[in-house]
Figure 1 (cartoon, rainbow, N blue to C red):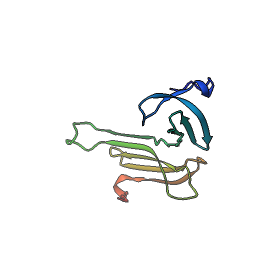
Figure 2 (cartoon, one colour):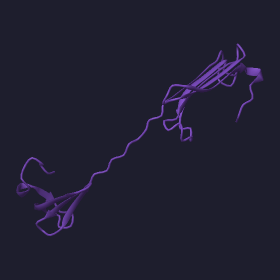
Figure 3 (spheres, rainbow, N blue to C red):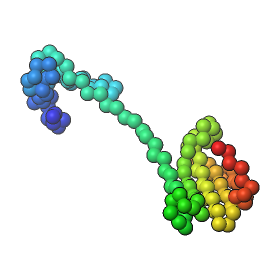
Length: 133
């Protein structure tokens, strides 16, 4: 590898074509591309790439009084961040949902991640809730 603290006269790179370690004659840096010109006449290119990724957080859970498949969960909850698709909500929304079968309750709150403002909330008895799925 190249020691960037030394002079280009002392740099050496293995040429992939010649299969020899050769002197770097010249270094040209343009935008995100660095070109190392080698003594054999070949060039070695290094391109810097950067990408920003987003991490979506989600928490889900179910509580039940018996074994899975034996009883429906008596409590389900989720808290997730989703992209809304609405240009007015560029950071997306947080959707918090709670289904409590023992107490016959359904709660859902949708919050703008940018402002923290509640956009939508729905609280009703579970027996009256109509699923959108």
